[in-house]
Length: 122
Image (cartoon, rainbow, N blue to C red; front, side, top):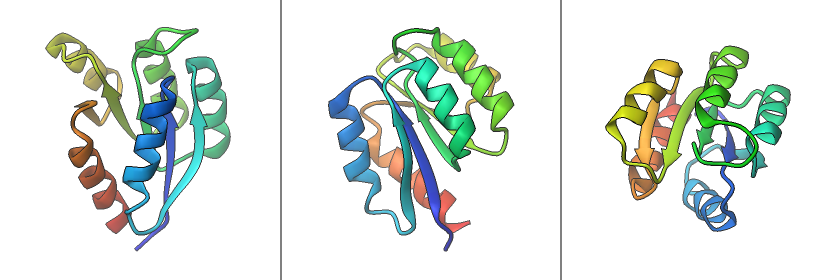
């Protein structure tokens, strides 16, 4: 089982804390960064090159889709999981076309854990 290097980009302190707790049950889980804004997230992600990026679409300072495209280009081997409160099917399609590997609603925490666990087992 390999180390799973995870980066969380979300502006909600409660969501960041919930994700850290939930993902800590995964064998090999290592949190390599946390950001509360899109500009901060892109800089840190480029520096730490995580295996999995959990990305909220609604954060301050830059539009989420452009950040997603930039991250996908800069860290092409990372799994990008859009984790959002927006249930829009159109946004989901746009995110998947822009480079997201998964699009999950913030109520789908169990699915997020399963995706990350599968990455850890690879």
